[in-house]
Structure formats: C-alpha cells, structure tokens
Length: 494
Image (cartoon, helix red, strand yellow):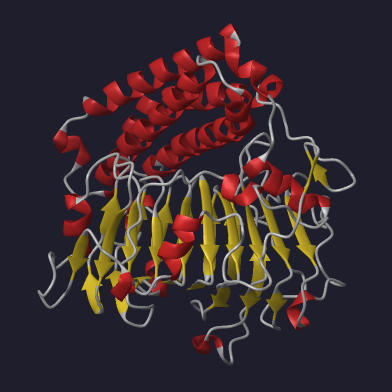
C-alpha cells in the first residue's frame, strides 16, 4: 500500500536539477520560480520601510473588507452577478491578507542561509498573487453596480499601488549571458528516460505513479453510492483544514455533475480518479447566466499543495455562453498529471501562484489558458476547438501586470493540434494575446500543426496596448504552425 505523508511541496523541485543552456527568455521565467537567493538578496524585505508598507496595505485591505460587509442584501439582489462579485472580492481580499501576512512573517524573522535561498521566490510569488487579487475583484464588479464600484475602487487601487511598491523592492534575479541563474548552471527540465523530472520529490512521484488500487485513500467518492461520499464536494468538506499531511480523495468512475470549491484552508488535498475517460466532473456555470468569470469554475482550487491525477474537468456551457471556466487554480505549489480540462472560452484559469501541468489535455477557443500564475506545461496536448462564427481562437492570455512579478506561461514539449470539432473551420488560431501590459508567454520544443495562424500572436484590442512591453518567445518548435517567417514584429517577440 502507498501511504503519503506531508512533504514540503516547494519549488525546490524545479531547482534541484539543472538544465542545459536555454534561451534567455526561458531562464528569465524559470529563474523567477526557483532563484538561488542569498541572505543579502532579501535585505530589502527586512527594512522598516518595507514592513511599514506591508502593514499599511493590510490596514487598507481590512478597510475594504469592512465596506463590503456593510452592503445590504437588497442591494446585492440574491444571485445577481453583483452578489457573486462581492463574494469573489471577500474571498480574494482574504487571500491577499494571507499573502501579505506570510510576507510580513518572513520579513520580520531571522533567516538562515538555506531559508534565505528560498525566501525571495516566495516573497515574489505571494506579492504577485496579491496584486492580481484586487484586479480580479475590480473586474468582477465592473458593469454591475456603479455605487458599489465607486465605494471600493479607491481602496482597491491603494492596495494594488502599495503591493506594486513592495514588489519593486524585491531584487530581480540575475541572469548571466552564459546561461547561469544566480551563479548556478541549469540542466534540462525534462527527464528523457522517465515520466517525471528529477526535481519532483519522491513521495509526490510515487503518489502520481501508483495505480488507484494501491493507494490508501482517506475518502472514497462513488456516484453509485458504494463509497464514503456520493459527491466530490462532500469529500472535500470532510478534509481537515490546514493539514500538513496529504488527504487523498479517490473518485471512482462516474460523471459528477457538481461545482467543487477547495478553499484556501484546505491544504494538501489530492484528487485521484480512474482516468480522464472515466472520472469526470462537469458543470455549466457561465457568464451569460449571471456568474462572474471567477465563479464559473467547475473545479476551483485555492488550497496550497493541491495534486490531481487521472481526472477530467469540463465546463459544458457551450460556446454561446461566453466565459465558462472548467478549472480555476489560485493555489500555490499545485500540480496536475494525466488530467483533462475542456470547455470553450476561458477553459483553464491559471489565476495565480506556482503551478505545474504534466501530460494533460486542454481544449477550448477564446483565451482558453489564461491568468497570471507562474505556470509550466510539459508534455500536454493543447487542442483549439471550433468557436462561434466570427470569433478567433487564442490559446493563451497571460495577465502579468507588473514587470517585477515572477509570473508567466511556459509551454514545453507539448502539441498544438486542432480538436476534432475544428475540422473544416477557417477560424484563425493564435498562440496568445496580451491580457495585461507585461504579458509573458513562451512556447518551446512544441509541435504546432497548421491550425496556428502564421502571424502567431494577436493584439488584445484596437488600442494595441502592451505590444512594446510583452515578452513572447518561441524556441525550437516544429510543425507547419511553428514557422516564424510571417510572425508579428513586436518589440517583445523573439
């Protein structure tokens, strides 16, 4: 029997093995995930000014939360989009408070040399997530109620500005021209003769490789009533809060019509299914029916250290219902193996923090991999689908808002091949477009068929904002869609 006890699921998995010299754009992204900081690198985080700014930001968050708590039920209107937007904001502000508290604790404690080596990456990750939370809150309220929008706009802007200040005080990673990151030579991220990179901890590797029959789950979910629970949500609710050991939920073969939320206090949960064609979680929430994009997710994960394998998650709302998320992840240090995520617009919301996807399938139409996480996809099948008439497809929409954020989308050794329903379509499909001013996305060592438009990338809208500040890279890709002769000629494309 395989029994997995808590192991520290930190980004040293990405850093303890090296990688062969890669183009600068790859090093910039990965160094932000696993920089080898020294005690001196985090000196700014110990300054009285830094700590004072943190405390001011926490006070501002508390003030906005108080304002939201005073809104009367009649104003929110039950299940209106405004009600969901306020719910989102309450949750997101609580997450920001947690992230700033983590930063404050790290900034006021004495670090050993080994602790300092990881601290800067953590600080950047926490603060990057905190910036995005306020933006998501404001976007959810936009267009619902002007009074509520004006009520919280000032406070949200103040918090965002303060966090931008904090980010600017965390030193940038030093990347040398010879392919070293802070003095450390890097080797390849992929393991040629194995299914997992050498940097993944042994306990996680065993857990992700073991057949379900060998596991000793803490809870069993079965749609036919033969398990401990009949829904995934019930099993998640039964999991302990802030657990320092893995809580394994085995979800038997079945179609589960439900929306599952794993909140920020549910740490180290593992979902294990019987395969993407067998264990399916399905929902239909969508923007047209009055939900915020954030709240449309069929599976929403905010608890850190989350793992999933052999599970399919879908949003079956259809292309006519606009934003409809299958999976949303704003959980730090989360990983997915042999999973599938299907939908149309906004399928996979990689909202924030550090995330990893291995040998997964992702399908959709408009911006179907989007968000502002520091996220790596390896060996995944990316499948553009047929959108509505008159629409175009964009695979990614990365939302980096500040040049000091350590976020970006990296797609390595994957395939970009049209889904079956795309056959015969003349739809243009782009690698991505800049959701935010400092959008950053990399495709490397990936097969692209002719579904990819020769231009490669597309502007967000007619304003062409961000085209001078994006970072879009392509490296050693192959296939008809990987040809770069007709790519857009923006300052930030390589």
